[in-house]
Image 1 (cartoon, one colour):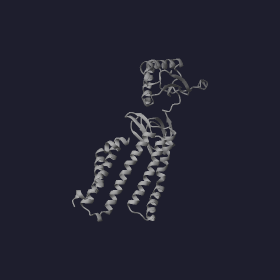
Image 2: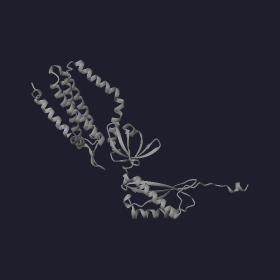
Image 3: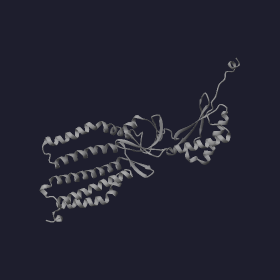
Image 4: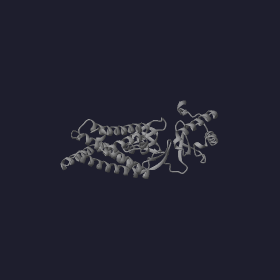
Length: 351
């Protein structure tokens, strides 16, 4: 019997389907996931490797090994096919859930769907259900007909999950809590206080076990476990409470030798420049506020308040405002350097 004639109709169908999936893997996976380019390429290569393995096992089974000696090979092939089918089914299920219950957000790369509490919960529940069905199918294929043998496999899986739950369960639950609170959403700008250092970060994605952040100032990725996100002191700058926008402030320490009137004139000139040239960088319809926050030992602490809704450009706005104030202070002769002062008791000096 020739090789081609020995291959059954079902096996021919598997070969054709896997060849099509091999050719269309990139397009299919691109529609079903929002992974980064590097992860996308790795996962597509893995999917295509599975396609090659399935086709190769079918051909090898008929070309080199007799049927009575290839029972283990047939079981391996069936488990591989079933695992691949469950993987694709779960991907389609996740895509449907995210499309139905996710939230559309506009990012730099276009409109994308981010996860919500409902979508994440349904995906986790569906993943558990798919895993149980897959595990039972594999047990049946491996012919663990004896209840003790099947229970032993299920018990081993249960023990492994119980032993490792401390590593994954807290982060998974914390991820659900974060999504449910709506306090840290994709695209939000956060001010994180970590070990005494303030970091401006944009939320890229809240995943199952960790949250990916983008450092706004240094333009690099950061990763925090979901439990760490809940433990840190975080200010969400995108969740401003006022309709005017975020009330941001710039602090300056100016010596007592400068009259308050001169300081206010300085900031009035700054506000005029901002309204004329940079009105799109802040909410220019709301006047800038100048207040005295503190009268310290060496200088007066002046604070400039302004409103902005362009949170993603907040650092750039702060840098521009400080540069304008520096230039104008040099023109007006107002020093922004905190002076070092000494108080001399004249009566004691005379003695």
